[in-house]
Length: 330
Ligand code: SF4
Ligand code: SF4
Image 1 (cartoon, rainbow, N blue to C red):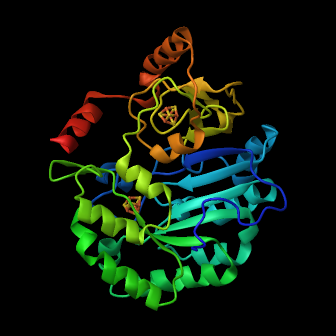
Image 2 (image 1 turned 180 degrees about the horizontal axis):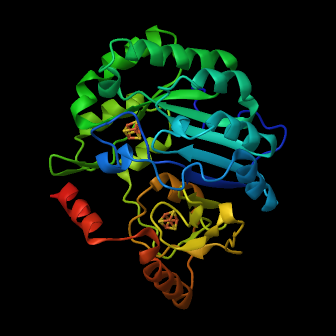
C-alpha cells in the first residue's frame, strides 16, 4: 500500500473546510515544452504579484472565518517575493500545499521554518529536460526532495507522461527510487501533442504502462473518463475556488464565474451547490472531488449558463487567446 495521498495524513486535529487553488505568480525559471502557461507568461511577472504582504494575505483568509487549504501554484511559487514568510503566516491558521519545481535556494529555508503538519502535500515536478540543462540539476533536485522527505513532509515527485518522455519513464523512476525518493507518481498528460489529443490518444499498452507508475488512484479515471458534468450539482464556488495573482476568485479552473476578490476583502461564496454550466470539466480532479449526483432544475441550469457567459470578459478572453487555443489543437 502506497503512502501517496492528497489529504492530511492522520485523522486528529483541525482540518481545512475550504480549498483555494491560487495561481500566485506567472514567473518561472524553467521552460517545459508541455507547460500550459506559454513562454510569454513565464518570462514576465504578473503586475500584482507581491502587491500585498504576507500578514495582509493571511488576514484576508482569517477574515472569512474558515480554515483553508491554500494550494499554491504558478509559475514557480518559490519565486514569489518573501515566499517562505508567506507560508509561515498562512500556516498559523490554515494549511498549504504546493506544486513546485524545487529549483530555488529558499527551499531549504522552507524545510527549516514550516511545519510539515501544516502542509497537506508537496508535488515536486521532475521536469527532466529542463533540469538536464544544468549538469548538477538532477542531483540538486534529489537533494532537496530528500531533505523535505527527511523532515516529514508529504512529498511526491510528479513525472508527467508527456508522449516524448514516455520511453524514458521506467528508467528515470527506477533511478529516482534508487537515490532514496519514496514516492514517484506518473501524472497523466492532458493536452495536445503532434495534433493528437491526450490522454485519449494513448494506446492501450501505453495506458497500462502508465497505470503501473501511477500512485494516485484518480489517474485511471482521468485517462478513461469523458469529464462532462453539465447540470450536476458541484460544490465549487462554495467549498473550492480558483484565485488569480490579483486575488480574483473564480468557481473552478474551467469557469469564469466570479466570487469577489479575496485579497481586497470581498468574498461572496455560493450558499448551496450550483449546477455545472459547462460540457468540459478541464481539470477533472476538481470535478471528481466536488460534483455530486442529482439533477438541478432547468431554470437553475440556465441561470448558471448565463452567469458563465457574462463572466467571459473576467478572464480577458481575447482573439489572441482564441488563436492560441486553435493552434494547439490543429
Ligand atoms: S516548471 Fe512548471 S510552471 Fe515552470 S515551465 Fe515547467 S511546467 Fe511550467
Ligand atoms: S463540474 Fe468541473 S467544470 Fe463543472 S463546475 Fe464543477 S469543477 Fe467546474
